[in-house]
Image (cartoon, rainbow, N blue to C red; front, side, top):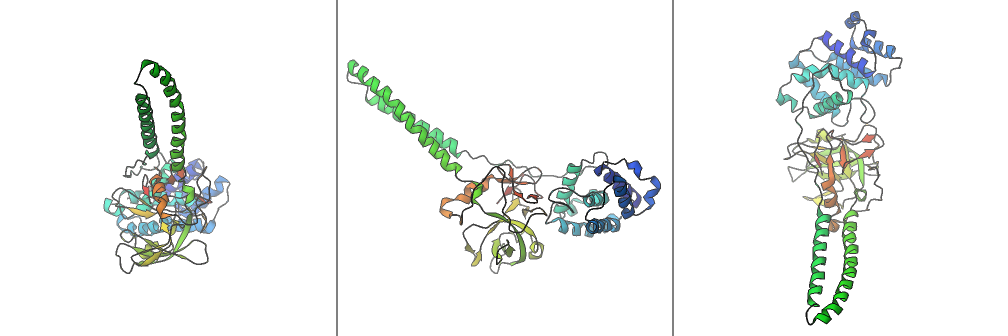
Length: 385
């Protein structure tokens, strides 16, 4: 259990490192001050003004009031967990930590380290955020590193094209051999005469095989993530499905004239209240259909570990606009108006969706990008579907 003074010292050291300042700018006797006074003094020494003053000071107040006793801090950590459920950092744009992140991290670190594993499991968003901050800021020597067990994941590799090419080449070669063999018997003179024809025929056969191989590869490459209309949405309302315990129904705002109704299999992992006012990422050009008699007009994209035992909707960054389309660097194209289920476009794309080792959502390793930065998850190396 950390004392109030040791917490203040941690705040000073972490903020000075964050702002590239020598900790000696804060005299030892200043530790008698409150965290707010220490913060303002360090900011003044850095030569920078205070950005987002009200928001930063709100988090300074949270840190100041955070209980020292371990048995009293869990409820505060649960509130912080709820706050972080829809964003990557406490305060800031996209994935960039702010001074508020550094202050809160410094204050709660010792309490989180001393929590039981059972309680830690209830704070997935806090743990994801703590892991991100400790790796992003590199507080080596200042704090004990929090070790997280992350599920292993290897992105699937599509081998369909290679298998088809090998099969096609094998059949082509066999066909050429059969033609050659059938034309070789009656006489030596005839063999010589037709031998030339057989040799000459091999080249056209090979020439025909190559366009066929290219056509197969071309068809596979046509299935691009650009066919999907993936947008940032905000869940305005959520409730239990009237006839399926495993399903929830959500009304999601994607910047259109009316909200979309979407049915999701999230009842096992979230309550309707936990999803309400949460920002999500969803595919909006799937063909509308009924799930247990309730119409669904989209597909909320979620990350999940093996099992799955943990499932959560992808998190758009704080700066992303409601309704904006997710983009992928280097991949252009117009989405289909409505995906054709018979073409199995979605089934061919989703095996390439996964989070990387930092929890960033990707398609074949290319991040889901918005105007505010990439979309993320607290589950690294997870499948997305």
